[in-house]
Each structure stands twice: as C-alpha cells, then as structure tokens.
Image 1 (cartoon, one colour):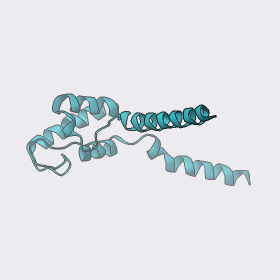
Image 2 (tube, one colour):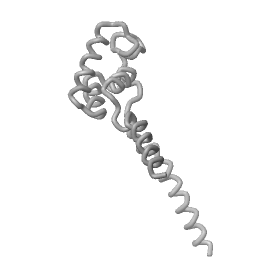
Image 3 (cartoon, helix red, strand yellow):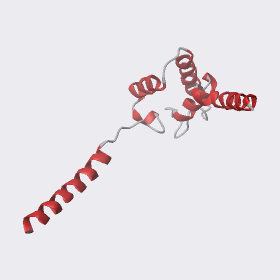
Image 4 (cartoon, one colour):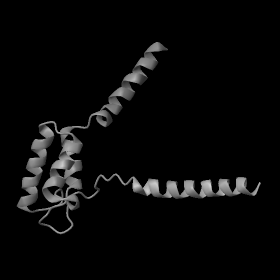
Length: 119
C-alpha cells in the first residue's frame, strides 16, 4: 500500500517538473513567439524569415543561457524597442480596479449617509 503512494508521488513529481522549471528551449520558443520582428509587419521572430529576427533569436538565446529571468528579458527588449515589441505586454493597470471600486465605495457612503440623515 505504501509503495503505491510513493510511486504515485514520484509520478506526479516527474510529470510536474517541466512546469516547475521550464527548459531553456521551451523558454526560447515562448519568448520568440512573444517578441515581434521590427522588420516584418506583424510577425513574431519565431515566424519571421528575416536575418534580423535570427539575430534577435541569438541574443534571446544568450540571455536565456545566461540565466536572465523573464522580467529582465522583458525589460531589455522593452527598453530597446518599446512596448510594441512585446505581443502581450506586462502591464499593471491598477486604475482599472481602483476607479470602479472607489466609485462604488463613494455611492455606498452616500447611500448610508442618506439613510442615517433621514432618521
């Protein structure tokens, strides 16, 4: 009975290992599908046949091999080419949450105040 649990745990660990630490090849493929080619219109460097895209892939491979995190890679490319180089830019749009929540809170406060003023 114990060996079944141990086997199950080991199988789960082995299956989940690629999810925990993705390989350099998978990171390279993911990033090359995220970065747009500045030469080709609307193509990622993964799909682009241009030499410029090949150069960008080699720089990206060096970055991944040197152990740069995804945030550092994102910062490098955005500083160099701007936000439009990334197909799905990392944005922190806190105003999308803050504005509606604050409006709702203001209306709740007004409603509660009017309830207590009438009494």
